[in-house]
Amino acid sequence: MNIDGQPYRTIFPDPDGVSVQVIDQTRLPFAFELKRLATLDEAAVAIRTMIVRGAPLIGVTAAYGLALAMRADASHDGIDRAVATLAATRPTAVNLRWALDRVAANLRQVAPDERFDRAFAEAGRIAEEDVASCRAIGAHGGRIIADLHKAKGGAKGGDKPVTVLTHCNAGWLATVDWGTALAPVYAAHEQGVPVHVLVDETRPRSQGAALTAFELHGHGVPHTVIADNAGGHLMQHGQVDLCIVGSDRTTARGDVCNKIGTYLKALAAHDTGVPFYAALPFSTIDWTLQDGVTEIPIEERDGREVTHMTGRLADGGFATIEVVSPGSPVANPAFDVTPARLVTGIITERGVCDASAEGLYGLYPERRKAA
Image 1 (cartoon, rainbow, N blue to C red):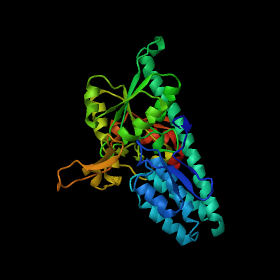
Image 2 (cartoon, one colour):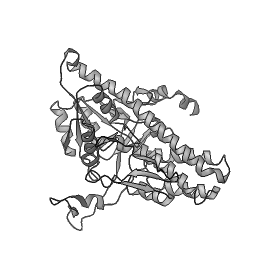
Image 3 (tube, one colour):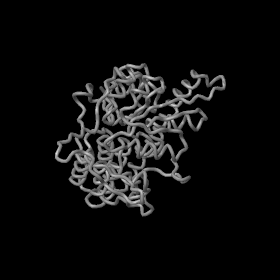
Image 4 (tube, helix red, strand yellow):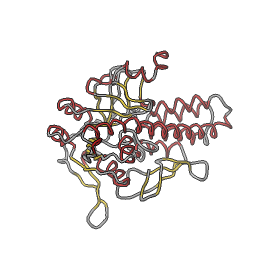
């Protein structure tokens, strides 16, 4: 997607051929900086500290991180150590383990002196597949938005925008390009369908206010940032046409794990009759799990994310300030699980299905055979 008219991806090979460049998302929205990753440790730190974030992008970064590890130690033990290091960085997003398993299996088929080139190429293929998947998600979800526009009078020349509420950042910054939840928005916008996005701020890290708003503004998509607790009120008053969120892990029966606060939006949408969709690629589906609430591991992050905030001062400088009463204990679960019964449908690269085992197996029949 574009930043100041310049197309970028969130991760791409460095011209030196032995490292990758990533957008440092901890610096957005006030500073745009690229960061070079050349070692296993640098890739692990980038994932752990959320220099890169979003389930699909975490997976691609981990794949490149495993490749970078092969420059230092391409033995079988080196593969195992690199996989363990990267897998420990973020426990909730299943794309991370999926990408590591795929690259590791590929590496064991070739001699050690071939493993760096093989892993780097495989990571590149995973990246390209992610772009293609997200583009397809955009096409399928874009039709949902276009149909809603017609229902609001669009087919008769009406110009009432479709209002989409989203939570956290599941745009192109969370993937290699296009995004998941925002891909349908971008597709509809480029097709001339009027669309307006309500952007939850998404405390405690404010990925909505900082990242979703940044990329929508850069792409020229109308949007409004709202407080996290405003969504239910707006749904009650008919100001939301549909919700689209991303996912860090989706179970085989359609439970959706996403950024903390997603479950509350789904409850409000269910109560007010607002359609609630999750958009995700195949790599986000964990076919080994059934009950998301009891089986998905929920990452508990540093309480400092809750107690402190960083922002830009009037003079252009930056400051981190404390916003919680000193000494108060803090809990910081990073994700919650929305049960399938609250999800209207799941948008994938293969189409849209019910949030159910039958719906998902209908799109991925080969997984039924594997099960």
